[in-house]
Image 1: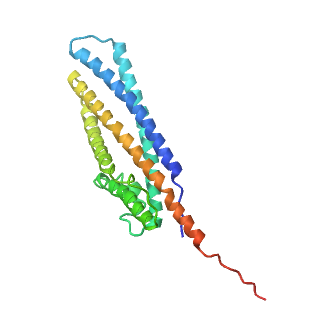
Image 2: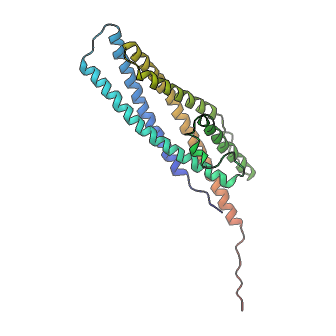
Length: 233
């Protein structure tokens, strides 16, 4: 029988990368406020130097590149943790709704990506709670799915808004359009802050409970009788 695989380090990696992305996001939020002030100055007949405009553009581009790099790495580490957690649960609970591979693949399939990750995350919470309860392990009332709906709602809003911003910014040329694009970016970055914090909480909460699955496996091994070898004459 396959054994459960450690997932603690993957949880730590995922949370660390989300903290990094969150920090970059805050820097980006400040940069967008500064850009908004420059655009507001121009819109009201003020003057900014070419150096100020170029410095702003360069700053925005550098922050965006750094953000995208760490966002992708963060997504990879999260999915690695998510898939390992679902793999471990599969070894303890029969008849889960999806295969372990879907814990990774569901994020990349159109339409399915809108609901299946949430379904699997709820299974992780509910089925782990149910399994441990059957084993007589009380994990308390704080381990609930209460934050999952808000987490997924923010994730969907963030993605939809990101698509709107991408399409709008591509055609933005006037001061008014650039100002609107900047305001949308500010809203998007504000949404990402609670989204990141809730995601960290979800990973942390589950990673504190998941080792109990391994403990139940080790306890079972200790209770198994040791075979006695009888020497033949």
